[in-house]
Length: 125
Image (tube, rainbow, N blue to C red; front, side, top):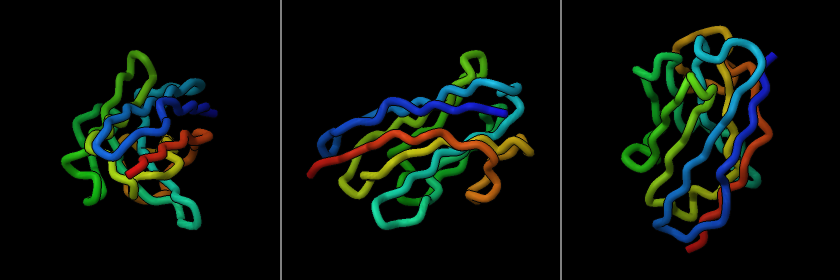
């Protein structure tokens, strides 16, 4: 089992920045790909960014490219999502996920085996 705890969300204004963290515990962390997804009210959970276990491969959804950066620190068992130039449409609950069966990142929600409880990000205009 892998336990994930997200943190770093909050209420900010448009144009501000936030850094989300996701701390993992349990089974060996460094061999898993990790991903960030988000879910806005009334919408399905959607892919945001993902990173390979080595950190050398990253994927981003188009609407965050150039604004968000995913990174990981395997020594701290933590993955980060740096979010800059936030927009009101970025408002959502952000979840991190572990892809336990592969070291490669994926954009598919079904490829992730473990999830955190989520952290709320609210961006006011």
